[in-house]
Image (cartoon, rainbow, N blue to C red):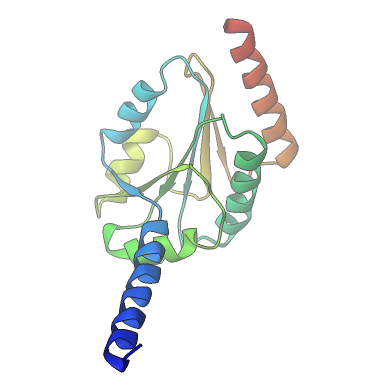
Length: 169
């Protein structure tokens, strides 16, 4: 193989690996003031979890491990992660997410520099503490929790909601 063809082969190989790495990045949707209502509508009649976090939140790292583990054990339970970080921190959000095996969990990120407006669209009483999780049953009755969720409480909630879903079918 000539050096020209070898060089071309190396360039193509590097491009293929770079493309695979880029393709591996999760899709991050833009979270607007209307997104929470849209998410609820998309999950009508189904229980789901929405967990808010930030790259600057140390307890969010522990919560993210719980979420990844939960998704591995119960892949059919819809989990929506929302980064409460401004749009300008997209690269940091992607780096943070790269530390966790999140499978097919939906990822969103605040798409407004006014975090207060977006928080208000989710929960008028939420003052911004993170992590913040919302557990919605099939009727979309909400249980909100601030801080890292107790793993046993989380397991009980998921088992109760998946059992309820089986009964409804």
